[in-house]
Image (cartoon, rainbow, N blue to C red; front, side):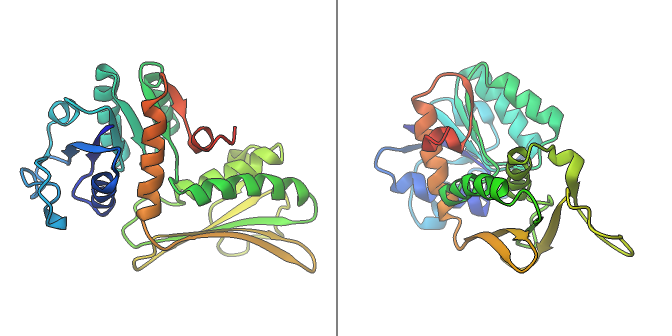
Length: 265
């Protein structure tokens, strides 16, 4: 399977390049980054001391020329540009980018009618299993328990709450027969009054080099249940992305998520 990486010079891009190079069933076919990046033209394996023969480029067409799948961890605007190129060429796309608007998500859904697209706010297999646990917990704790979602990430993360935290909120709200948009509380300050029991609260922490911690708290009277996932390495995201890429390589056009990949649907 021939894979191209978008955001090749970033931390996640480098982790993905290393994972592809170490996977016996994968070959690195392209490495993309933004125009003006100082590493354009360099071998994308230089940080590993490994010559790959694949130079980092800002030419999408060149990066996709021999690729079957593009794995994209960039920003929404860049991902959408790559999406259009993938749809035109029939290249499958794994999207790890977060922070899309409703309109941008609709654009992704439309493109998925032309080429296979995988989209998940978190590529960790563990996080996606936790999502299923949250659905069960929400149904069991539907009365008498207040729900709060706490997430922490590194200082450079630009969107908040994280895509994973929002997905957790969506999973809980859906299990309760609610709409997250109608029940989410994203900040509290001053005299807020008594907590509305139907709300789902979010708290965000940004600092240091935290890779990603997520906790969903069900707080009742006399007890508190917390379901937590902590990432200690981005390697889990890279391996999850390769698992998604393998799935797309065997799939037709459509919009898929980790539940499809793990057979949980």
